[in-house]
Image (cartoon, rainbow, N blue to C red; front, top):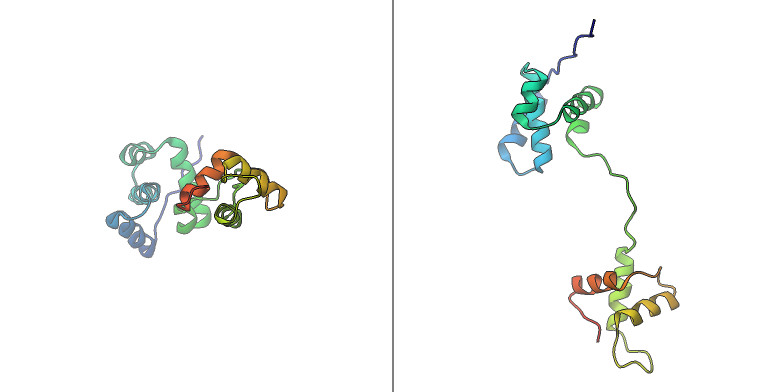
Length: 147
């Protein structure tokens, strides 16, 4: 015999917060969908009805419900940090690339090239070698170009 499902009972303060999130509509779409799903869960609708109404999968439904029951409203609505490789170009490295591109040219060079910038970064021990495309994007973001 399957165990009975634990219902989601929202305190009035949580329900008011969720209503404000849904009504205002200035939050991320995932957060709004989670808020709508929690409101639908608390109204006593079945899992299938909530999934169809909000447009979420079965896995999303049960994960959202368990996160709310285990950790409350804040844990259920907010995104958890994602794993992954940290960015190779830090703001400090971006500043060094930009300042290097704006500095005087090395002897024997007619202009800064992306390869020359990369070689100079490594030789000055400013950071790891990065691709020419990464240096180009950093300079484009800083609105400067080599040369």
